[in-house]
Structure formats: structure tokens, C-alpha cells
Image 1 (cartoon, rainbow, N blue to C red):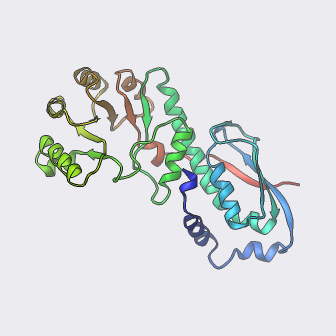
Image 2 (cartoon, rainbow, N blue to C red):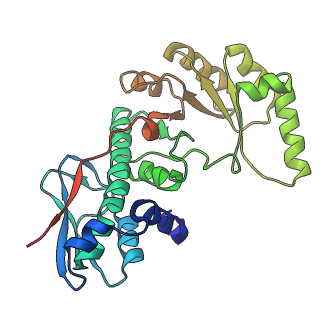
Image 3 (tube, rainbow, N blue to C red):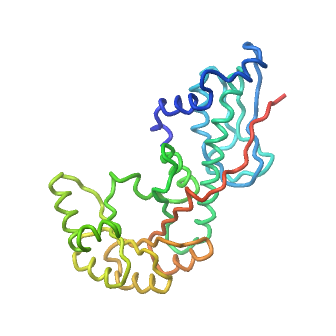
Length: 281
């Protein structure tokens, strides 16, 4: 996914951070000063973001030499050295914060995701992310989820149909929303998967009667009600649980036989992993 990140976005990041110049670096470090820095791990977790870090360094100064020692997806511990950056000291210092901001957040997401994935190990359920992402940073946050062992839900509003409660209420009901969706897809010659959010067992029965959806989203169901719903659906569509599910309760949902569990906390309730860039002498 990092290859799809436009250079213009990285340029905007630098513009936001540097503005008309990093006057601290420019005033203290000679233009011709050369050196090396190492990216140090200060907290255990799952590493993510090395590929985009390399692109950030290169975008600012193509002459910088970047040597990566630990790859994305690896378990890291305090004292580990992820990479070395060699070349212009001015370039290294001006790229430092942007590299750290990206890698710390991505590694935090990957670490959080891995904890959730480990918690439901052996159940057959998969952990999904959501659209609760940082504007402009979604592609990298979703990549971090994959690195942590999770699965991406839709990228945005354009690549999947997800009929939620408000759509249903404004459309006049579940059946009307589904029928309208199929007509829209046909009229616009689109082939998109259709998922429908349900709030009750009665809603599920109505969805199943249409036989025209790919996945049913069980919104705010208890584990007991989820099990009943999964048995009722009986493989006719994929199933997904969402809403109020925590690390403490997630295994009880996974054990019901549900196919997917979506967790917004993967991308909006995470703690960045502690990393630092230090001069290497």
C-alpha cells in the first residue's frame, strides 16, 4: 500500500513540519556535515512503517543511505536497532520527526492489532478494521492493521456497500434499502459486495428472505444473541460482529462462529509505540 502513497502527500507533510526552514538545524549544523543516526526501539511491540520511512528519507534527500535491519511485522524489544540513516546530518535531522511520527503510529496500530488477533487465535474469526481512521493517513493505518495480522474492511465508501441503520431508516426499511441498492448497482453497472447492518433477530430473518446480500453485520449483539444469529444464518451469508466489543469480551464473540469482528479501536484508540532516532558515533 505504501507504493500508492503520493509523493505530494509526503511533500505536504514536510511543508507542514518545516515551513520556510528548520532554522534550528540550519543554524547549528554545517551544510557539509556528514554523519549517521540509528532508529532505536524503546518499547516492545510489532514493527510497522519501515518502507514508508525509507521513502520519506529518500523524498527529502535521495543521497541518504538507509539500511534496514528489522522488517515490518517483526516483534521488537527495547534496544533493538531498526535502521541506520547515513549522509547529510541536516537532512537526517529534518526528516527525523516525520519518520518517527509515521513509524510510531503505524507500529502502535500493528501492535494493538496483534493483541486482538492473538486473543481470538484458533477460533476461525478474523479481526477487521473500520473507517475510523486519521484523515489523510488511512492507507498507512490500514497497512499497519495488515502487518499486525488483521484484515482490512472496505477502504472507503466507494468499494463496498454497507447499509447501516440510518440508511435503513431513511430508506423506509431493510427490504427497501436492499432493493434500492441492487437497482443502483445495476443502473450504474457496478459490482460491489453488499453488507447489511441488523439490530434484531427479526431483522436477520428479513434480510435472509431477500437472499441478495453478501454479509450481515450484527450490531451491538450480545455473545449469546450472536450465537443464535450465526446459527440462524447458517452460512447463507458471511457474518460480522461490531459495536462495544472489547479486548476482554472479543473471544466470547469469536467463539460463536462469527466470520469477522470489526474493531474501531485498532485505529482510533491506540498508543503510539516508543521509538527514537539517535546520532550514531
